Image 1 (cartoon, helix red, strand yellow):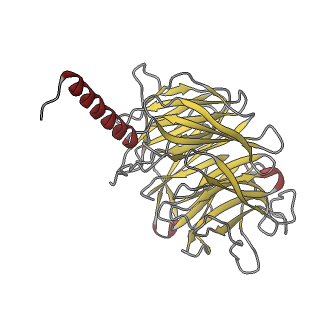
Image 2: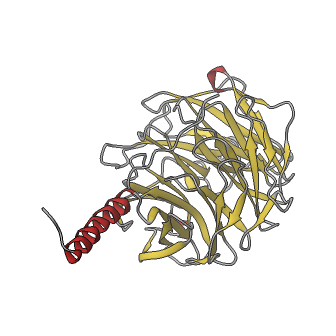
Image 3: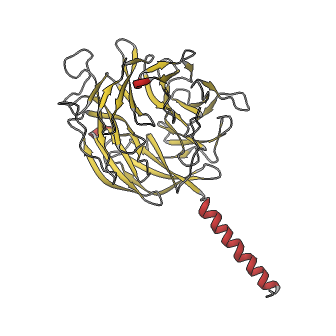
Length: 403
């Protein structure tokens, strides 16, 4: 069968359209949805952005929605990426949102903490998607924390089971309590990827000492204090993270401008790396690790920068990643307070900049860990962005490096 020229052109055009459609379906322009929680208004606001696959540029989509409470400070996503959880500090609420196919958010359920503590500061979902950890600044019935007092002598770590529909169940009991006590001024919580341990950073201004409280975790969510806990952690650790192989923990010390690294021993005990701590910018406020476990990124609040580090996969030792200009830092908006690497390709780094109501984006060099600013940034956001989270659009596998 022969085609005339018109038929040949039509066939070629049709083939091109089919191929283009197939390419678009497998390689969507939007690779992630980014959720930014701002706490300037009451109730707080959550804004959704699309992440462009090629450039990493952000575009606002959908309507801004209420955070479901006052002063949102922390976000977490379910491991199936169907739900977003938001902790509202001002009214002690945890709000579950469903995530639509186009990144739209719909409020599903609100849990108000009472017996679990007050004033949530950080939340973390375990990798298995079965437990949500919530660290509260105060224990139940307290509005202040007094070191050494019989009551109100610290923060509270609560554990909520997560159902198959993403809903939060009643908090898991610790004997007669609905929480596990931690030190005063807790700042961050992190669950290991293997689900076996969870850590909380705290600091005591009176003594000028920081600590990390460690717990081993059962699959049902019951916790037991790790041997040697709490572990020394500088002066004021404000953010904590761990690598995807569950071998290393990292904390940033806001007061001493340091990144503190630990190896994880049997039973969840932490041992400082002998060649640390490691220098950061001024007043590091947040830390994250890329999904492959190769690089660390630290947001420096006073400098308005991000510091990048390459991780020695054998020892966990971080070393500053130097870009082509010889710099080890990268400029953000004013007062970055949160940082993440996108969940889809692990290709882009974003910071939430609290004082100038913006997000700054960077392209991640997967060979060196260095980052360069994305197009058209920084991107305007809702007022006082304090937390960011992302989910991939579709399924994209990221290879995790093993030692």
